[in-house]
Image (cartoon, rainbow, N blue to C red):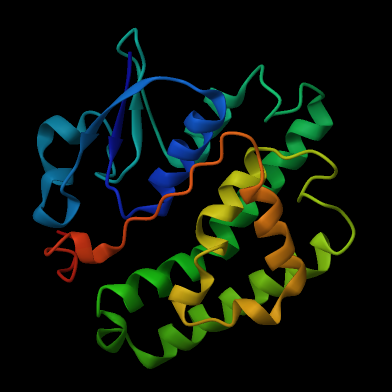
Length: 212
């Protein structure tokens, strides 16, 4: 059985849990206390050199890290990743967008929910806010013309974007001002096997600390 190395408040880890739920796959969970330094343990660094979550150990012992890479591996041969080369590349295009642009929302959310926002330079916070708003504006424009980010079909690109986009309010950004994004969020929630769960950072008393 596969093992998912997880930290429950992580939306990057939630991406993988969401796809596993859609696919109906069984897996074990091994929680990694990243704010207590468990991610920097040599045994875990052998699993993921960055010390982050998620990581996935396959049945044969091979290990894969980085959420979007894991999504791509798990979705191969399923409805969530097109077989056509161009369509598959479009999925990767939007997953790259997630890493480059939606990352701003992820950072703001983390800082806000763990009390770290005031510790960050004002210029950096402003940059992240502007980047987060830019990401939402782009998604709003693109989703006005199609139900899912790559077209008519729900793919891992939607899963990747959804993880942080649907928690935008927790980043202090006005999600309600983006009706197309809000409608897309509801379409994602309506997908078979949707995993409706959320774990706030407050479940971890160590999350207010900086990562080691």
